[in-house]
Image (cartoon, rainbow, N blue to C red; front, side):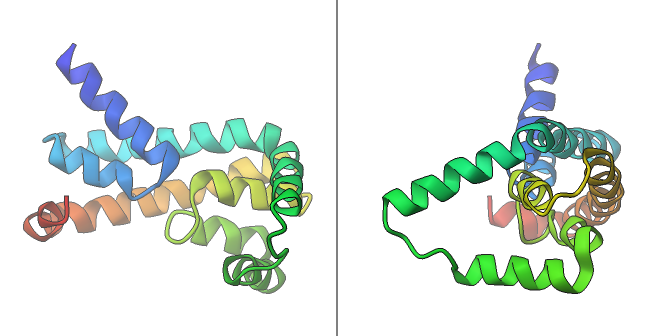
Length: 149
């Protein structure tokens, strides 16, 4: 039961913020491969869910911002539009684990009209690549990483 809770913690952390998966995995003493797999699965669960509700979530957020009289464009939204214009879905997928969250990156792709199959495909290769790389870096520099937890 305790092992299952560890797995669930890594899985849930990577659903919300990708780097959270490797950090939680190392802090709970999971192996490198367990952490990588759970981190990828966590991100892809968010991608799956939000690829279906992404456009609706964007409409809700837009109405929320109008209601609160917040500006339409922020520094973050300008950066995302710049990434989209320069690199398209490949750029959004590449930067999602680093600078965006799995939820936000998927919503951005959905708002720009990318088909679900492409969203899933590009986010999957990104999750695999960054899952191995970020988990490897965190496990390699374990002492430094644990200082920040």
